[in-house]
Image (tube, rainbow, N blue to C red):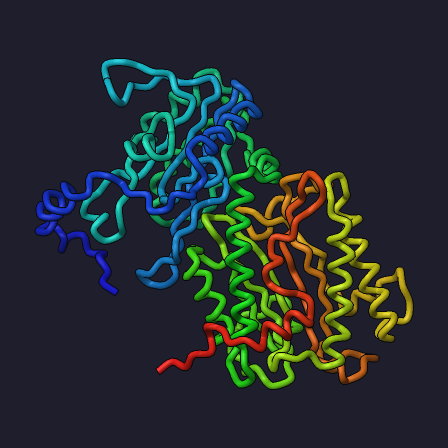
Length: 478
């Protein structure tokens, strides 16, 4: 991988890059046409400004670039709130919202002033860097393609921010600035660090996180479509993995099927590190080694899902390595499936999430009692086998903004599980190393609910039938 860190060695290339590359690539190209639209993002910004009021200013900044090691960075991902309000995917940017408006020079005619309610400071176009890292928006494309009313290069933040804040402002909404930000963003937001202490004598500093999070709890139609796509990709990956698994594979070979499908179908990332654990590893909730050998007779628990245009799904399936559940495996699986069915049946507008969770608890206890794995109901004994909560919302974050009562536009996962490590006291050895979790994404609708991940089978008979087919992971690499 070529790297370009020593700027003193690049001087001789500048003229060629500016003249040659720069003139050929004057326009920024948006390859993806299904990003949140400029109109949708503007509606969100307007809503936020109406919530904080005319005596406030809101300042948000993009996510930092994170170093992986030496001169290699992790793949960049935008800050959730910044993306929610802008749909902008580049680093080193600052968004300023001024509900009462501020006068700035008209970008089309600098002799005139215009009043705007939003400013965005972004990276300048840089033909030399764009040859290495890809095209940047620059202020003009941000206004044209992202619908921001006024944009400038981020070096203008220092000279403009004071005038914006001290125009009758009482409240400045600014997220905490983490001390470990040490990339180019650190220099961009330096004026915010410097002024925050001084502002506190004149204005009240507030964190906008809670206000924006509340806005994000119920998803718009656009967000639901993106989550539907992320979930469809995830369900396809699970179906292909079920068809591809064979005893003797390594766990990472199964994981590779998931991640291939994610990329093949257009997802930028996995929503989280894939969990693919077989046998004794199936009982580790966040297993991440993925190096074990899948043995004949193992169950494999795969918690894997895609992130698409910033929105993450979360789907888990558990299936037998050899294509057929053993009797003990099927017994445990059926208890978990019954718990999931009972919980999903409760999901509808106006229902408290705790009521949904209680339905799963009851079903798990009934099943464990029937198998003789617990001796009483309505206690804590079942928690010996069921170690986590029932589920969580999904959205821009795989564990997204929670609500207490369900309403249309809310998406929750439902993921009951039973885990029985070898050596569990008082348990027949036939159940050792059986870990089962079934997780689906459920959308609350006006009339009830919809299971978005239904394309990946969860009925044990349907799983066994699907596993008789060959998948994309069966081809040998040469």
